[in-house]
Structure formats: C-alpha cells, structure tokens
Image 1 (tube, rainbow, N blue to C red):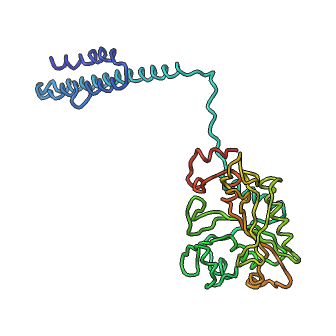
Image 2: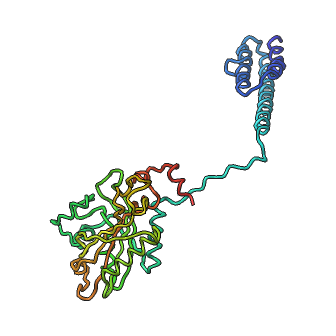
Image 3: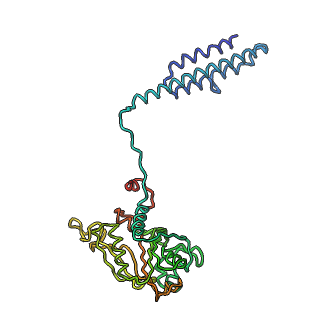
Length: 346
C-alpha cells in the first residue's frame, strides 16, 4: 500500500532531520512538523478513509508503531541536546575558584539598640516587664496624673480604639500596671511599641520606647542622675558628657530632660570647621526625659508617698539607634531595604 509505505518512511525522514537539529527550540519545531495536530503523521492518518475496510486495522496498527518510533527518536535527541548543553555549562565552570559567600542576616538596628539598652539595665538589677499595646485610658493617662481635662493629653496625639481604650502612647503604662501588682522595692524597665499620630523624617506613628521605674525608700534625684549617667556612658562611650535640664512631665516632679554630648562632633559643635549638622552647633543632643515619680501617681496605685519615693525615665529606642548607628532618617528603619539592613550584619 502506498499510504503504508509513506507511513514507514517517516522514521527515516525524521532521523535525517534530527541530524541537523542543534537546539531545543529547533527540536520542538521538528516535533510539531512530524507529530503535531497538523503534522505529517496526522496528514497520513486523515487519509485512512481512502483505504479498503479490510486494510484499515493494519494501517492503524502501523501508525501506532510509527508514532512510538518517532516519539522515541525525538526524546533521544532531546536528551542528547540537554547533555550537550550541560557539558557546555560545565566547560565554563572553574572548580578552583572560591565559592560565593552566602549573605548573612542580622538583627534589626532597633532590636540591637533595644537589646543593648535592656542589657545595661539588667546589669544594674532591673527586671524587664511587658504589657498590652492596647490599653485603657486609666493606665495610659489618668493614673499618670493626666485627668480628662489635662492639657498634657494634647501632647500625646493619641490614637483611640474606642472610648476609654487607646493604643498606648508610651510604655509608662507599665509603671502603673507594675505598681498595681507589686509592692516596693521594685526596679523595672518596660520596652515595647508605642503609637502616636505623628509622621515625618524624625517621627513615626509607631515607634519603640523603653520606660524605667525604680521605687524604694530614700530614692533621690542624685540616684536618678547617677543611674542615667552610667547608662549613657555604657551605651555611647565613657567620654560621653551628660547634663540635666529642668522640664515638665505630668507624672514626675521634679522633671528633668537629659542631654548628652553630640555623637558626631563630640560636643564641640563643629566638624572640620563646619557647624555640626546633628546638634546644630550646640554640642548637645536631647536623649530622654525623666524625673521623680509624682506623689499623685503613687496615690493612684495605692502607695504611700510619705513612705516611698522613686524615679522614672523614658527614652525612644529609634533615637538611640539613630545616634548610635548614624541613621539620618527614621523611615529607613521600616522600609526593609536590604542595602540598609546589611550594614548591621554581625
């Protein structure tokens, strides 16, 4: 039969065609030409009705054998091309070259700063405590000597969840929670996230703060000064100078702002004859707020202000990280830019 002869000749034609194929795309074109829906084998199968009924079974069986043979030839050539490609790649590989060092991750600069601060205070005997980020108006304001009409509430830019429930604006809420649960003496620090309605190059609506509290008998402002001076020298170096300025906070009295000598100019106010861009020529940087716990706060938690005294302080962890690591924009801490984060690889 003429059709059967054409069918049997396809294997030879494909073998000759495959000898000229040098790439996988070419091989795919060859497969479509012979085995595709409109390929040579399909064209011959479409002429099946031309055969006498008695010859059709033999033709169908021959077609299946040919299809299997063509498929085997194509897969054999595919395997050969892949081996050739792999061999070409290996020929360019020099096993004597040093391997690529994998990128090592690191802790985030905020985490590094927070762990260092906590480590310093742990060494002084402070305990680390934590509490909820969503807190009540009582813990966040009222017990801290800020009743509903107090003007200091306007300074907080509070984010309210609902009436009397807020995203905490400071970790000072842990002052109240700790004193409500324990009796003096106590020394705790409370690191965590806080939230305020504020956002620019130096402020973020979510940031990290560490609150410290020490309560005992005969605690004085001199104890506060010695503690914070030791802390700043431990974190920023022994040459760091510290000064205390009178200030106001509703939950401490007296209250003081704490400044430290500029980390860039060393307190000189200038670098290479130019005004320091960090401290604006003053030589000082504000680093934290502190003071002696107000008697009204002690009364709110059931402590006798005639028997106990204490001090409290709060610092922004982003502030510490930016000064310690020379970060110019607070938003870099939250953008997850690998180029920035990779600078902190340990």
